[in-house]
Amino acid sequence: MGSGGATMSVMRLRLVLGLLFLMLAAVIFTRAWSAPGLDARFDPVRMNLGGVLALVFGGLNLARWYAAWSYLRARRTPVRTPLQPDPSAARPEPPNPELDFTRSEEKS
Image 1 (spheres, rainbow, N blue to C red):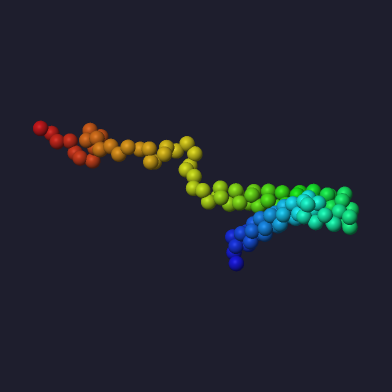
Image 2 (cartoon, helix red, strand yellow; image 1 turned 180 degrees about the vertical axis):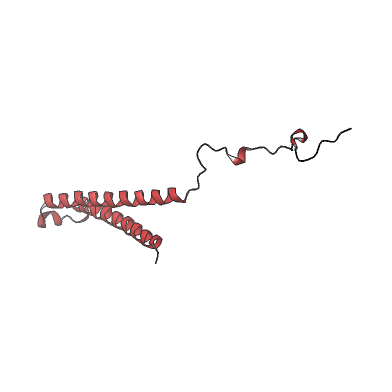
């Protein structure tokens, strides 16, 4: 497997981990509605801290995924050499016969 395949698998891992951490943070922060008994069994301060850390890790993984994705997308985008005219903007013009220096001058 080349380096391109390894890059894609690391990118996919970062995306999946980022989404997983964000879902975990959502579950932790909505525990009062989804599972009311958890607040009685666990320390709510530690649960909130875990939710904040899950948000941080999710955001970090998504930011690293987005940075790698935008870098690879920018590398794939073809660009023109700077300060060069756009070739599609040129209009085709017929050749000027006065500037044809390949024919010899006829003397009369």
